[in-house]
Length: 270
Length: 269
Ligand SMILES: Nc1ncnc2c1ncn2[C@@H]1O[C@H](COP(=O)(O)OP(=O)(O)OP(=O)(O)O)[C@@H](O)[C@H]1O
Ligand SMILES: [Mg+2]
Image 1 (cartoon, helix red, strand yellow):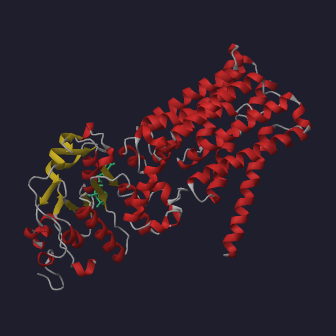
Image 2 (cartoon, helix red, strand yellow):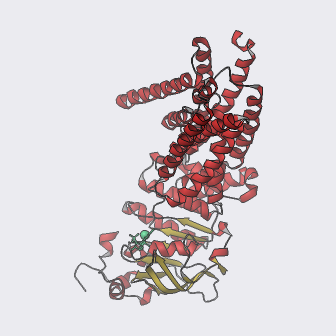
Image 3 (tube, rainbow over the protein chains, first blue to last red):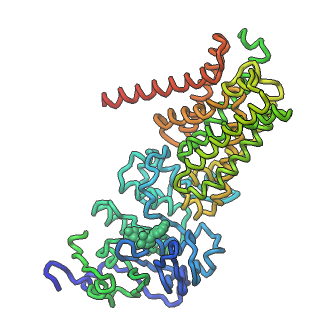
């Protein structure tokens, strides 16, 4: 081990939340999935399963297809071959939109000049089909709860263009939370956020996972946090996804080998 | 007031105010979708509809509505091919519409006062049947906007997220462009084909400078548009100039004043 780096294995016991429950329902399942952009494959023969209550962190170098994987899971992209199931249904036929919350990698970076308040943005995440014209009270309550959960209750009437990057990230988390989803798909939600806010953000996710039973699938480059907080680690590399069911069994060397790069120390990251 | 003793002025005010509300409300979404050119493109096509009506002898307003609606569908179809450069689709339709209008006009040798009124707007030309069409179609457009408000907000703000909340994004986009086409076609009567797009974009630009929420953005845009149309019509009547021009000049003046005040505030604070 290189001096200055810590053994991640010895740190994983703090605040770890993953409990293996073999009877938990499958939230996401990929069976032999292949995906190509304009004929260039970026994922090949990927199979994996995420169960209710899981906290899965997807890590891997830039361009490894982490975002692609997440978009496939929610049905924004269609697999070339193979099968993707969301809550047991073929994702192409999945219509229970209230069950899934998704925050894209670009979410907080686009539309910063949009003239809408935090409340209006969060409220737009609450969608109830034809009942929407008469759902005022339910909607207001859901929005209040979501901004509370995300810790931005005080910002409700501010324009989103006048928030800091980190505050805006939380707005998008609240927007994903407002429909009370059973699973959250988050694509690098903490990029550009200061260390303290990142800690807070992860604490919030762990709370949601532990106390509200929300399944969390998060893409991150913050390997330290992934090891610290997630119960499952998915390494995306060379068109494959390697899932490690229990971080106790995963060593730093192993991850480094799978990802093809060395892991900086946790102290440096956090 | 004495100017309302003229029937044609009453009609001009009714048609003008409905037009202002419609076009400016659509304008907020249009500007936020970076489709500011859409008004221009569709109004040029609407003009060719007017020319077709004059040439073939049907009510030019129906020609404008039909041609603009078809152009909207065409824009949506080719927008997919140029998804990252939506303005290419708009530029194609704009020049196509103008070309068609010019050909139809020269075929019909109809470059006369009537056509001129559709280019720059007119006070005296608003007929009772024009008012009927404007208020019927206008009511339908406003109703659609009210019902689809949430969908339009979601799709405009974040298309991916909208798709994941079960919104039929493609259908909403197409329907919206269709509504814009109808609104634009309606407004060429009072404002004129060449100036519709200004009434669509300027009030939205003003409101984005000062509004503190999305709802307020709408309210301010509609307010600015109605104010511009009403005062523009008064001035047009008093000095006997085309209303389209006075309306747009007033809207532009409001924008300038707002920008100057904002500039001063920025310097002071
Ligand atoms: N729309 C697209 N068209 C063509 N190729 C694409 C497209 N989007 C992504 N790619 C390619 O697919 C691969 C995977 O991209 P993806 O965005 O999934 O990577 P990522 O793991 O999320 O990377 P990052 O860590 O930088 O976010 C990359 O090589 C990228 O160049
Ligand atoms: Mg990515």
